[in-house]
Length: 470
Ligand SMILES: [Zn+2]
Image (cartoon, rainbow, N blue to C red; front, top):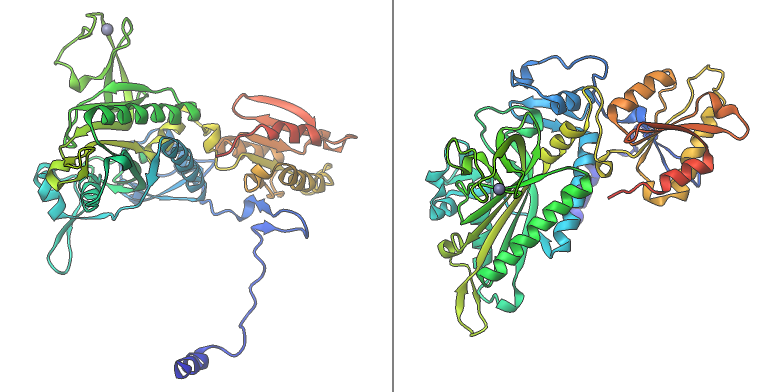
């Protein structure tokens, strides 16, 4: 060991090398919270022009959310149906995962993380290796073993639970979920994150000791999905759906009504019946429940629930010990939420043609502060804006890390406000003409309500007090 250390020691330079200048992303006045400076963010953007359709983006059709996310530096194209998620997008995505975690764990969900490489053996056992077509990404390792990049994990999670030989009915239900990257070799990737080849999904699998208990779990998860969309302020429709290659006996989709949606939904105004058109008889124009007339609307599928019964537990012999001490097959359900798709669909629903609007909880940053332009008459208010920044983050600890200082003071306030408007910070606070009044008044733009008001410092802090963060 000593010899090794000595040898490594010889490899180490004797002087510490050039000293790195301190990172200026955080301007850190002594004794106060760090300030986030916008000029230091990595955000390759094209705010003033349309993103040219480069060779990387392919020629897929675009939609509003894709255009806005590319233009504002949330995404960067990396190949057909694949994107770099840039820092703003990752912040929003992590907040969305936070909301989903809270709602899944509120109903007893336990988070795990399963391998993306899923062995063909598992998929052959369930029959899906042959059943699923070319959308399954398949690959072979150096030992000539076949794998797929798992688009869904019924096989993996059921064999995991089956390996627990002493599972008792007293321990059930188990609700196991993960939020991971999934892969689908889409024939026509398009609309950015709405139909990509690589995406984030939350998939949950439930294990119950009876069909009745499994039905209760199914309803519980559907309610939790409703709460996720309600908290995001997104109107959704829950419709009956076909079970497809997942299988099982009952299935519902959660759809966001959107004209670019690829699904057609049938809605009965008289009794509230809703279904994906693909589950109805062709040309059916009357409600199968009350015979009332059906209206059609387009939707984007953002969630899907399946009642599976013992379809997978019988294949992998996933059993528990019942109250009579006998082994019995678990009753299963599975539940997906398209995480990256929800993010894009929310932007699609809420934004204008030019400006992103977020569900408040998902905004990458809640507040953007804009000090005056360098050399302007109000320049001395730069210091006031910095003090406001420090006072906000000191008085409101929940907003630490949520306040950006747009320190690009070579730009006019108007230009920076335009950028802030496009990025959709819920609150933009400007030190403009009334900043030099006694007392100083800041101009506050509430982007969700389009209100503009002039407030003294304490007024700004009182207003921001109510901002909710995940
Ligand atoms: Zn009806």
